[in-house]
Length: 86
Image: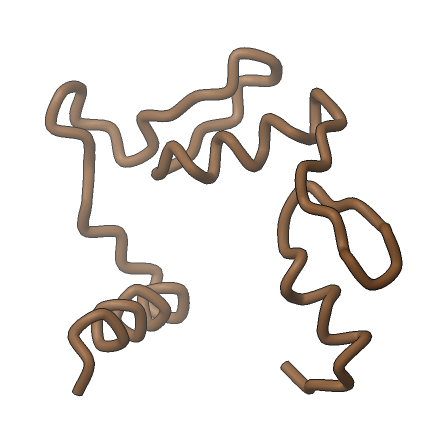
């Protein structure tokens, strides 16, 4: 079994159980990354970066097939062109 795949599966299963085993070692918070625009907090800095695009309107991911731009999840959009099911 691929180690990366196993860890991704475990992380996904936490969405069903609600388990949140990690917290910031600096402040003890489970969601230490806070948006300065609206105050929403996140457990990961990458989630905060994605969220921040809702405030800036930035859409850095562009589909090479149709030219539409997205703030995230370009791979989900690309399935429209390939016909691949999620």
